[in-house]
Image (cartoon, rainbow, N blue to C red; front, top):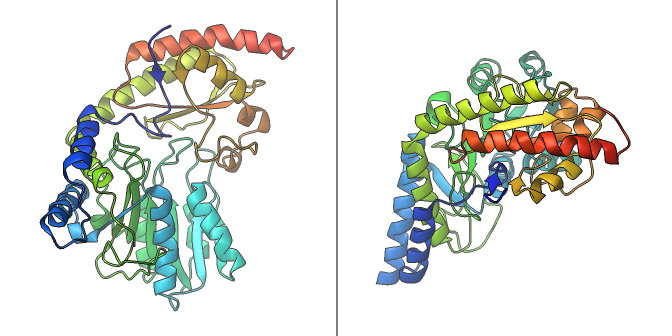
Length: 387
């Protein structure tokens, strides 16, 4: 099998050719510092403004509500810590879920050490937060609620609109922060209509360059910077702007949002086909991603196997997948997401994430199934077990 089959798009995506060319052009011709007062600086500043407008139009918000960052992790940190620093009287109670990305979970653990009352909402076996628990724990002292829109390991989608309505009814002064890194460019999200206060997203998940992200900040919401210095990005994010990266991000957003519905439809067809083949071919395999999950992420467990071993065997066939979040896949601990969903350890050990993009096709999915049919019995024999 000579052709590469890339099924790790939730970790990062291959940049569009147009984006690569545009980033190179900007790097070569528009190298001025956007803060400089001369012509070269103004040219760069105008390109940043253009990209900001492209992102804002994709989200149907004002361009003044978009702050550029270095990626999803920084956006999540700035959203949570920046809001709490700017609003110390908003309350000492903060809420998130058990299945958040580490860039949110670790922030909340740090807040607990600093004296905040932190609640982690449990999820059901589909990876969806238990709204009844959220209803019971919100209070007048709740300042911020952080929820991931689309889980990066299983693709489970949270009921964001219901969460926002619940907040409005039970704790109207609290702010909703949504980690939309795995949802941006794959499904339509309008933060203003849902009354989302803060929303994080990233460039390299939508076929843009790495090292660039964004944060939507609802008009009137006050944040304090996490990075202090020259006061760029309306004082919220100091440091010279990554002009080529930001420009590539804007172009990638414009391209992917123009094909949003078609991309979703084609990817959903691939997902359904692949899941059907998995269920037909491997009787003891378990699809951990619920039917309602994003079609872009399929988490599958093969019991009595080590996912790392399966991953490397697939790699030898030029098929690239992951064992979970790319941010923690090199670590040895079990997936906190699958554990929170109640998945047993033997299935967690053998969990593989196949994450798709609109660039994938049916033939690639079938070739992956054939590769699995060949690899799994070999691994089982090597480990001394029979399936």
